[in-house]
Length: 405
Image (cartoon, rainbow, N blue to C red; front, side, top):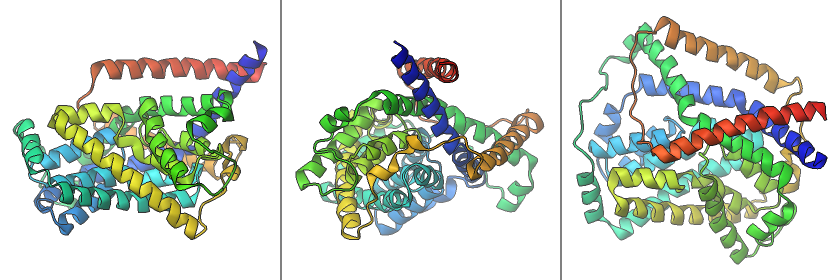
């Protein structure tokens, strides 16, 4: 019993330590995302993403790159763009770019996995878009796309602003909206982040290596040579693991680092990271937007694209000898609370959080701000909320055990 309690304490300490290591990156990312979403409207995007050719795909990728990394926000925005005239392929490009090519995700990955995975994330994001574009051109699902448009309700009144950017920058109302949007970004992801980091700590403390060796065949320590069939199994099991945990992209990075430290291949870890758009909540939301046939088609599209992208990344990085040693990525051995650059950055960005909240809810308490979000699944949201609350109980008790036993 005492051994279990000690492991509980270690799990909670690891979870909170992981979050502390990434806190400044979350704040920076969501602050940048909030600024972009308030000062850049969808109108220009809708006007330039109507075609199905390379230009519209490139523009969809660019607009996704400068957009939010929250999967559910990206789903709502891509649906809105598609509904108001953007082509299906450019909407998919936007969706993939806004969840794989954004700055904040790259910062989190660099903290937990290193620069090689950051490069893999960005190159892989481009490969995902290219593979999806190719599959759409080959399959040419015109009838499916037409039915998906018909499934969407007619567009309601638009809230897009035509004010010049310079006028927005001088407007107190705009900065109040930035503060409110920043709070909304956290509101969208707090449950996923809580559950994701808690699970990472539990896995680090309780799950033996033998489990990963069973789930991912021929898993070994460090960088080793994997056969094609082994890699294929890893890139299939990566999405399966992501599907079972249903954690968003910003919450699954610590777990991805643990997988790599346990010896899972570079391809398998990248497939796990790329899988945030094929988890069940996303599948269900796409079905509400476009109907089940289109939702399953998007699942097919993204699943096959991430398999191809992950395999190409692995072989390409292996050829260039860029795959890092997994055994050197044991992040549980680090002291997350030492006084270093992370400590000071966290203090600075916590002050930035206070400033944004002040602008949004003190100076701009009467300013209304609403951004369309993906439809929520009540049962799932309630389950996730209670799971997050249970996680907080687990973490509080665990920290008490950590420092009393």
